[in-house]
Length: 406
Ligand SMILES: Cc1ncc(COP(=O)(O)O)c(C=O)c1O
Image 1: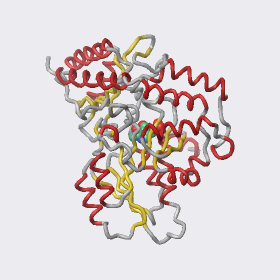
Image 2: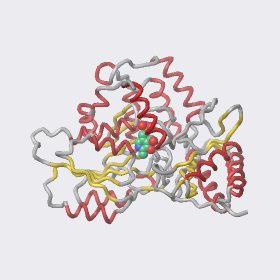
Image 3: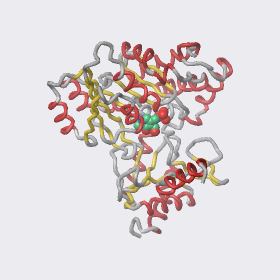
Image 4: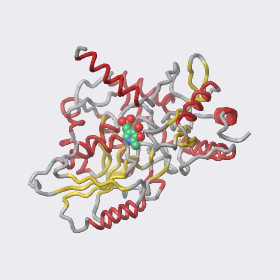
């Protein structure tokens, strides 16, 4: 066998042993209802929390962006990839989330990959000191990869059990006399497999007590959580008290692409100099920048959008439980419907699609064995009729598969 055949065979072997992702293409815009194989189905799997992916105001701004500022930037930020609108968007994000400043990246994945190594691998004059990151066991892959990029000779990485504040405090206490340069606590604001929240207010207190910096990835919270959609600090009444927030423009805020880190001005200035995905990767195109500005403006002016998302979520959560399904999480639009076995989740997802509901399953290794689930995601773009259609489909399919009793 030649090398190429061996290469393909090995990839096939690993793929076949571990296949749990499948794609279901559709032919319409991302919205409350999409078209799959010519048929309308209710979308309950997207991060389009506010329905902005196909919102006329957001689309108009994207088109204006192309007309006025062109299609692409053909540059990284510091060469010639910064237009006034990039700076305007950064200011807008900072104001919205309650920090001094913000810096854009091509995605939140890139932002998280940028943040950790740019802070921890630069050690001018501090070569002999260690840094430490305390990280929640359920943190997103982009935080994990960001930490992996930090040199292990000088960065200690300590994992605490998901949301186990007592364990985190024990770790911080045990290290309180250690000669660390930086101490950072890193957590997702919302854990996206569970639809649960990090204990942000307690984390703010603990970080303060132990002189640690608090980093919160608010990707599933920006535009989603809190009365005005400002994220987990909004919900837990600690706006302006989280040191570093990362977030995405690829979910509630238009749903295209882009991410940011928000925090102190000096830190943002530092990241503009030191973070490699910022320095060595292209600047966001004007269409996305303009659309994101419009999305933040819309969110600030029209409070009814977030309210609709929260109302839709409360309605779905209440009704799905009354049908006899088991769900987890508190009040977030991510609603994991617990099914146990992977085969049930797979079958149910397929049957629901046939019944006109687009929802995806998660199973091992994405979630622990025996905790397979369908991850429903609610959007402001869903009408009551859409949600009722989905609930009826859940009831019929759930009874057929004996997940709920008849
Ligand atoms: C918690 C969290 N962080 C980061 C990301 C990455 O966001 P982006 O799509 O902007 O790269 C995601 C997206 O799935 C996420 O859920």
